[in-house]
Amino acid sequence: MSSRSASVVLAAHLALLSSISFGGFPSVLPDVHNFVTANGWVTDREFADFFAISQVVPGPNMILMMSFIGLKVGGIPGAVTSALATFGPPCVMYYTAYRLWDRFRDRPWQQIVRRGLVPLTIGLVIAGGYVIARAADIGWQNALVTAAAMGVMLGTRLNPLWALMAGGVLGAIGFLTPGE
Amino acid sequence: MTQTIELGSSIERVTLASLFLGFLKVSLLGFGGGLVWARRIVVEQRRWVDDQEFAEILTLCQFMPGPNIVGITTCVGSRLRGAVGAIAAVAGFILIPWTIGLSLGGLYLRFAHLAVLRNILGGLSAAAAGLMIATGIRLLMPHRNRRAALLFAALAFVGLAFTKLSLLVVLLGLAPISIAVAGIATARAS
Image 1 (cartoon, rainbow over the protein chains, first blue to last red):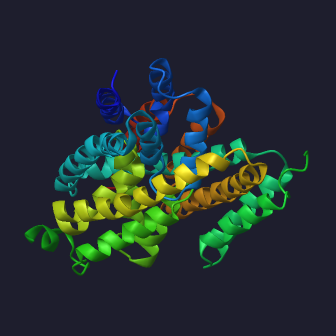
Image 2: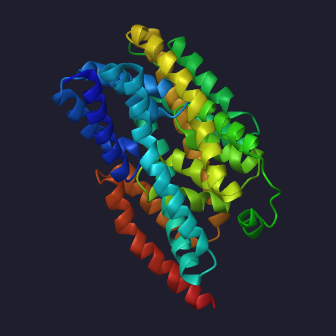
Image 3: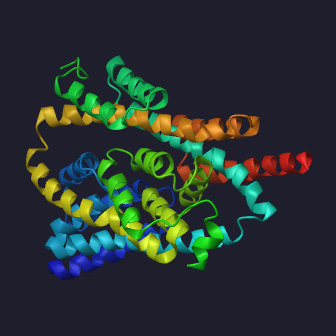
């Protein structure tokens, strides 16, 4: 397969996945992984590295990760089409859904639905933080950093960037890896 | 722009440039969880929407496919300035950060094996997790007097954090019960 047609196949697959990625793009990552490795475009190791890097670089993480795959498959044009396929279809859907939602804003049924659903969403956000904390957890030092960052955000007006920087510096000096 | 007048009673007209720049900032700062920054900038700094409405938009996005932060960007842009607003916000969120990210990423791939980089990444993740939890707690504050809301937030948390259930299963399982309880509470209050 030429790199150009490979890019098109990849973009079509990503567009499909992004349209069904309920619960965010990470939920379809396993499928992306199978698809690109089965096609021989990306190795396991590369896939893991793409993920790690997309998490370190600021910006739209999942869009970037898909662009790294596109870059590997078809150069810059591949990266661009992968990015578009990842965020284009959901954007159109978000826009349409929000318009509809907004139109019925004052209906009593919508207020009830909102009162029911919003707490669930918030619980999921907190769970998301908890899951990341557990994934990074290799000792009490990590838990301490997580708790400190929480404290900074809830108890002070400090920019959260300071908490992130402190975490990065503590990691760099080896504070978080006592076993090594 | 009749739309803006209809919707934004208390909001002054937000310029497209400030939408672009606001979400550019969300994107560039959004390491390890764009949600933290989206809420901080949209709610606290620019006061484009309040905590309540932010949580509603987030809820809508949770039930839709795609990257949630892009959804928040689209909805806030649309809320303030309609379709052009959505485009300006999404462009701000993606255009420049994507270009920087792709270039940096290429560079980074060469050094990804270095232990010190892995350690830094670990420290950043731990702090990012704390910020994420704090953001959730902030969003919960407007609902702290509703016992049912606290209960269902806790159930959703437990469902996702301590079971192997997928997000969709947790949401679809709890949503009907939570809505029913809210319906009963509303009926009683009136």
